Amino acid sequence: METIPEFEGTNLHNLAETMAVEEGDSQGVIRSTFADSYILGEQIGSGASSIVYTCTNMKNGVEYAVKVMDIRPLKFRADFSKSKMINEVHILQKAKHPNIVQLVDTILEGDRLYLIMEYAPGEELFDGILNQPEGHYTEEKARPIFHQVAQALVYLHSVGIIHRDIKPENILLLDNPDPNSTPVAKILDFGLSKNVESGMSMAKTFVGTPCYLAPEVESSRQTKAAYGKEVDAWSLGAVLWVMLVARFPEFEPLPGGAKGPVRFSPEIWSGASAAAKDLIAGLMCPSPQRRLTVAQALAHPWLTAGPPLALPRPPRPPPTPPPAA
Image (cartoon, rainbow, N blue to C red; front, side):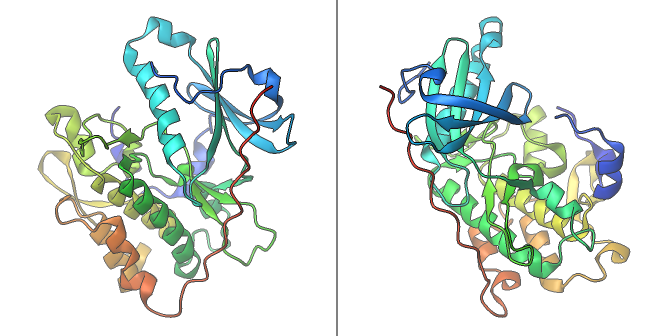
């Protein structure tokens, strides 16, 4: 995976106009066929190795989303791909938080793995940014969304999970009948997550989306050096940057092309508060040891100064599907 330096400072609206959008261990996997329990609905998304549909459970009548993953290529590839697929199942099974899309059922059937998750209609944060009347989020609107994502990350880190691909496209804003109120935000897509429990606190592989990659992740391709949950803090800072100015982050140049401290161009950031820029700079500090943690970000004055945030109440967790007959 190569970095994309030409994206640095790019305006998201220009990018959206010019880029085409492309669309082991089986413990805990339900031992039945998908068709025994669910009716497949319409396609609502797709990825490199999966397609997402709506589906309805035949017994309780509840509508869910199902991510259908084709495992046939695994027969011709190294075990890493299989491990990655099973890894996503176990991570989703562990992640129980109101600001994380919930996995409710899994079915392994022949060459297909079905991940049945809560159905949460909404839009990606990326689209939410582009749809703002101002062309980007105001700080007032950004605060409660940022707070929800940060809470979910603090939870993930507390149970030994590094997400490793936090970006606006992996943050879902639920549909809200009141356009003036804050939507519920949920983290999704754990395909690049790393479970760092079991005595291991660091990851080593070079994964993620270049524009939101922490410097230590980029350097890990050459150095093979380990990194920790600090990479999610860096990505969270990059997300806040993009929310507030609808551009990708800019950096002071360092020898060798590494990312230095973020650079706040006056023509772009003149209307932003000092507190917002301080929070972003702290989260995107090049040094993991000096970088703000996500928990520290939740206590930053940008979030805590002023009246309490009006956070939305997440919907009830989806019901667990009844067992197949």
